[in-house]
Image (cartoon, rainbow over all chains, first blue to last red; front, side, top):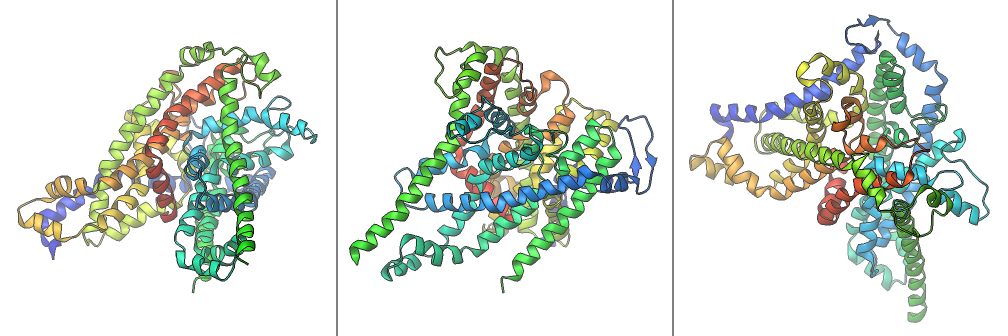
Length: 292
Length: 282
């Protein structure tokens, strides 16, 4: 009833347009262009023409061993997310919802790495993992563990970055699980206590089943986040050594801006688009099927 | 029975508590080592990384500020983030107003476009954006305009969701009353709705500021001029340089994180709730 006025309608449009134009121009149009440009070859010099090459860029990507390797690294990221990050984040969520005297301190501390510049965090870890002199190698030597060149060894580079990633984001995912724990009605725990359930039993039979929804959220965020991961790998290894820790997004960057194969970069970009959308739809579908 | 119950409850309490302390140490110790290292020379960093600096070298901080120009990069980042945040707030809240308080046909399409922007990986835009920017002289590389516009665009969807979520909760009778009293849309928006929505505006502003300050890849692409470096690229400059003086580098890391640390201490609750709310909706 209130939307009748033409003057008002014009104002509403005027309110939407600036933000929408900016968003379309800087995000949506480039996204569409990346599809179009992925069929062209271009060396990045603005005056040199783009050349139509058909599916050549895609052929190059899919026949490239490094690309398949980068998908393997995505799998490492996902594995790390579910095997390392999820349990730790859940435990941290339990901690900040218990009556510890240092509860506030714990919560503040755990979340802290998330808000700091990732470049600073990544750089810090590069030197903490530095062979022989960094914190981690020194501690490992004390424990008489074998020496590992974390970022220099092709087999370890991606694992190291994954672990630093989990270290950084444990506090963030803790809050997701914590939101779930807070939402559980207190009476359930009360009646659990009366029935004689121990702390672990309460967690196992009350907290965990009540939190299905939040495990779904975690899974969706984790899976869709892993495929497009860029920052930490880029900062800590740049995709090296010898492209061993390359992710699709870092490969896009390196192909385009280091090797000047802009067309190939776009082809990887399109792959990221398709894979990102497919995974979002798929995970949402899989995880909402269990809802009923 | 009563007693054994207590003992068993205590078990989980203590085990979890132990893990709590271990994880706190794992989180904090790297920062402590970094602070130590920022006050050492190379020999001492490599020789005894874990020990307290024997004789703190404050000069490292001088080098980080004076030679690596880390304060300059911090100023650049803060400037860029503040401007982007203000722009984002203005555009975002205007869109949020329309989406949450009117029933236009186009609302769902607008919403759809912004939703798509959240789901689609931003990295696919890198190459086309680079090309786009090189064509438009106004947006040439090494102008903060380009980054500002990109940052505003990136931060918009989350802000729109947070703010429109909040505005939906404000009674619509308010709008009707205001219009009957002769308010036009801008008056209604700026004088009545925005002041009420301050909590949501604050949350989304804080999140946007944080994201802009920490952003790396677009700054890396569009800023090559050293005096315009943001914090992230200023720091990247150190990566892989093992022969350089390490002390100043650690000092630079500490200086670069300090503004965010202070920011976090002030706005902890809002940052935490805002980031979780934004990501869960997205």
